[in-house]
Length: 308
Image (tube, rainbow, N blue to C red; front, side, top):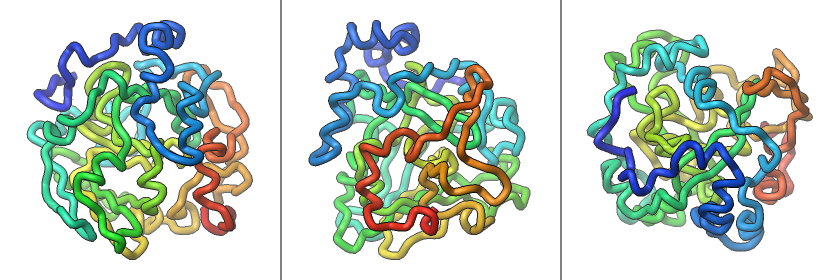
């Protein structure tokens, strides 16, 4: 795997993989408070600090080999091993993100400047991710809201729209018609500002692998994985709800919200159970992927079978 000038943190800020993989060692070495230091908040979000591994305290961490070798990243192919085989063509240095729309201070920012204000030593989040299969990954990152605050969103910013790099020379499957490229995703503003909504720049104590969304990607753990857009180059603060790529492609199958809800059947398969990649077994799918206590209040009064 190529090594990048950025976003690889200095060596002193990288937690050794052995510690990340050993929950007791992490807890003893850093302390629960340190692990959750990147999840500040108020109201219900404060309860996050009491649980060092929110929503996944009893889950086994997915092996590094599986997490980096079995992926959905359609820009590099549709087979699960295509991203690992083809993503070496992605160049992540230099890398800049443009933040536009309803902001008092819109502009462009480089990955180095994005990370300059964060102590990554305290930014390790062990979070579940689910599609038709589930992983538990120790991400390195920071809350999306911390970056948005730098651009000072206005009161007209009701949604956040994200866009992936579009460059078929680097992402060869963008010459196909699987999706109307570039890939786009969106969140409601309150979802984007929740402390569990992360921008991840690494995993397993290492810089983010290309196939997992280098150099910076979204992680929204209570939603299905297709909401967690990879290789982000554009963020727009908008007043109208954006149409995400999979919603545009197949609106009957992929709704805008994409919250994990085992009571809603996908048109082509059931969602009551999920397959764990680390052992191939199946377990019951949890509402909001196990984060119901932290995020259910965001959807009070909504019909979650209609708004799927």
